[in-house]
Length: 142
Image 1: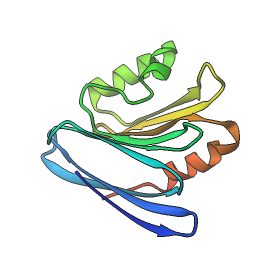
Image 2 (image 1 turned 60 degrees about the vertical axis):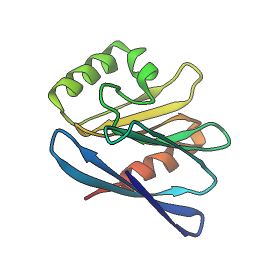
Image 3 (image 1 turned 90 degrees about the vertical axis):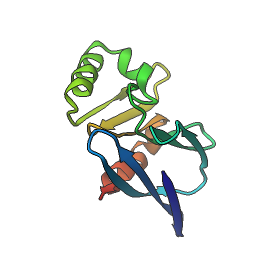
Image 4 (image 1 turned 45 degrees about the vertical axis):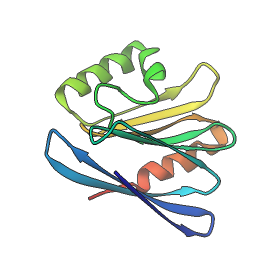
């Protein structure tokens, strides 16, 4: 896994490169996120990796290809029967799915799964939700 960053005004470009064992190919995601985060990298060797971009208010943007785990939003997804069932179905069929909601504290979360990678956010206050949605919309995969 490789990460690169460059800056432009109040945003920073990030790149996440991983390897898919199921397709035997490398993939690359690029997006721009608001500056002011702390990066937490978790690596499971060549098998999986997760990057968490954590802000002072504890809102988090993440990218993870951890096998067997739905995402940092695991609890949010499992706390709702509909999202839980959709998540399980997508996981077993390697289908693309976007799940979202509001957690027990009134904060927003969203998870996109494309069959290999989970990308999303959690702990986001209402006034920042559109900013985090822009991150997901600006995401490009190569």
